[in-house]
Image (cartoon, rainbow, N blue to C red; front, side):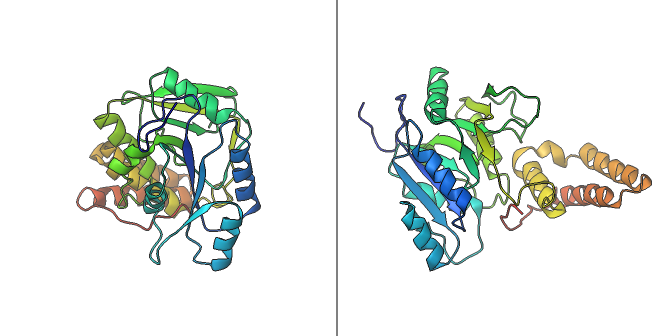
Length: 284
C-alpha cells in the first residue's frame, strides 16, 4: 500500500519514525533501540532529540544509527523536545518513546497498531500495568467518559499520526503532564477514542522515577499541571479544603512530610485560581 507523508497509516504494517528524548547514551538506551529494531515492523527512522550539549554524546547517538536533533541552548522543555523531533519526521506516524522504555515482545507494535485500526482508532499507547495483580495484557478504549486527567496518552510510548502532532503540537507552557493536556484537546476536539494497552511486554526503568527519588517538588509540579491545564476541578474550593484537612490530619498523626505536601498542594492550587502557574519542565 502506498503511503502519503503526513497522513495516517491505515495499513497493518505501520510506517513510523521513533522519536526519543535523551541526554545520555546509556546501556538501557542501546537496549531500547535494539528492541525497536527487533520489532516485526521496525521504525523507518530513529530520531533522537539530544539535550546533552556534549559532542561526545551526540557522536555516540549517531553511532546508534539515529538522526540527531540538537536541543537549543535554553532551558529544557519536554514539549518542545517532542515537537523538535516531530518536525523532521517524514513518516506518516510518530512513535514517541522514552529512552527508558524497553519492549519485550517482537510483535508488540504491529499487534497493537492492528488492534487500534480494528477498533477505528488512530492513536495507540502502551504502558506497564499499574497494578501488580493486573492481567498480562488489557486493552482499554479511552474516551471523554473515562479520561480522568491522569490515564490518557503517555509520552512513555505512544503511536500518533504525525500530521496531528504538527497541526497541534504539545504546548510548551504545560511544564508537566503535557501528554494529558494533549489528550484533553484530542478527545474534546476530534471526538475520537484512543486505545490504551496495559501490557507486561513493556517495562519502564527510569532511575529517576521511583520511590527513592520521587520528590515533593515533582509531585507538586505534576498535580499543579493536571489541575490547571487538564482538570480544573482540582482547583475548586472543596478540593483545596480537602487538601488542608488532609494536611491537618497528617500533622496530628505526626507525619510532617505528608502534611507539608498537602499544605503545599492547597497553597499552589489556591494561587493557580488567580495566576497561571509556571515551572521548569523536568521529571525529577
